[in-house]
Length: 174
Image 1 (cartoon, rainbow, N blue to C red):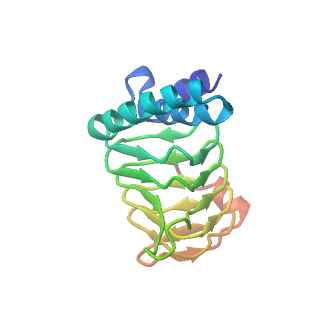
Image 2: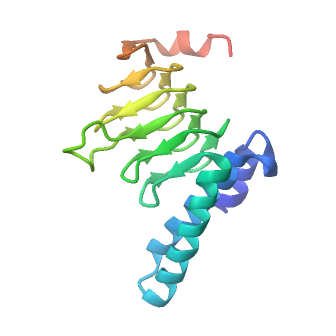
C-alpha cells in the first residue's frame, strides 16, 4: 500500500531516484515487524546492501530506524541525509542537499521531529532535538536549530522564524 502511495506522490513516478531510496528505507524498516531472527537477519542484510547502493546511486541516506510517514516526496535526490532517530510526518517534501540530523557529537541520538505537510527547501539543515510543526516551510539553505511552530516559515542561518496566519499561507503564490 505504501509503495503505491509513494509512487503516486513522486513527481517523476517510477523514474524518481528519491522514490527508490525511500523504498529501500521502507524495506529495511519492514524487518522491525518481525520477531524471528530467521526473517530479520536476511532482511537486514538485504537492506544493508540496497541502502549502500541507494547512497551511491541516488545520493540519499535514510537511517533504517527513522519513522517516516506516508507519501514522503524526495523531489530531487542528492546529498540527502536523514538521521535514524528522526521522525517525519505525512505528505512532506524534501529537496536536494537536506540534512535532518543530530547537532552535537556528545548527543548522537537527538534528532528532529518533523510534522505533517512540511516543505523543506534545497540545502536546508534541521539539526538536533527540534520540532517542526505541521504545514511549516523551511527555506532553502536555512539552518534550523530551534523549534518551528506550525504554519511558520524558517529562513536564514541560523533560521529566523516568521509566523504566518493561515490566510496568508493559503494565498501565497506557489
